Length: 395
Ligand code: SF4
Ligand code: SF4
Image (cartoon, rainbow, N blue to C red; front, side, top):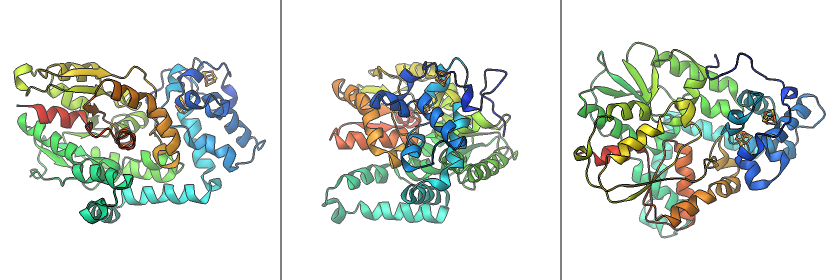
């Protein structure tokens, strides 16, 4: 794999190359909520250095600071020395995965198994279906409210798609979005149909590889990634589009010349000439969330704003802070408290502005918002992918 997003002629992979200037600290979401040096990029680099030089044991207390990084890469963007923090962190996670506590390893492996195995994914979908039956809902626990979201949006791929022909756009769902956001794939198909473009959901690619790569299983991540890229470049498709910005970010970051584009970026170009009368009137307060992955996914938020502004009656908000919401790199699973603390200011913003729709193109962020929205009982907010929101409003 080749790093595409390097804007310098050199890469710094030795933790010693960090100048310890601290310019990255204020951009780091985990440092912001903890004010703890070990929870900052500089602190994490020191820990990795200590581990690599055998000055530190790979104990639970040391590894928890490696695990709590959301891989938002705000530090990398702000670092004057251009330290390649992503490679440092993913290498460290991989190297010390064997030393993680047993629950961390079990959870990580289970998530990977359930999201990348079609049979297990079917079992998960069925389980979710039954958990939504009234008998379970009466228990009224938060987990079932959460499941209700999943059921609501976990529709089948209900649209006929043509057999693969020349000029067909392949739609890559991503492993988690395949379970939670089938509606977005259907929205892509509908928009493409309106533009007389054939499309086909790619069902033989399980994962882009980022799930394993980012959580300490680089070898498995690379295997998934190679197989995905082989299919995308197989000449079956004019182009492949994927609507999970995390997948787009990973694919763009690590490989050049892939026949792939982020679906939001692609659809926004298709809709760029739409006028007010192409959309239904929508008198709603809508807030746009910009996931950390959107930069490397190459999603232009000015284009998203332009399309949304074409919808008559809409009132658009953007968050006051640009910090990571806290979902990244499985923190929603492994460090739920951190995720909730990181998203808190955004939840307050949602409440104080009476937001009715929250739009995000990252599945992890989407689940993190739903978790906190449910926790706060803000029942009148819907979390949507921008593609679905736009499709639902097209005349
Ligand atoms: S990637 Fe994000 S969470 Fe991790 S150290 Fe950098 S700024 Fe902090
Ligand atoms: S900004 Fe870069 S060089 Fe400075 S402390 Fe952070 S990682 Fe190190």
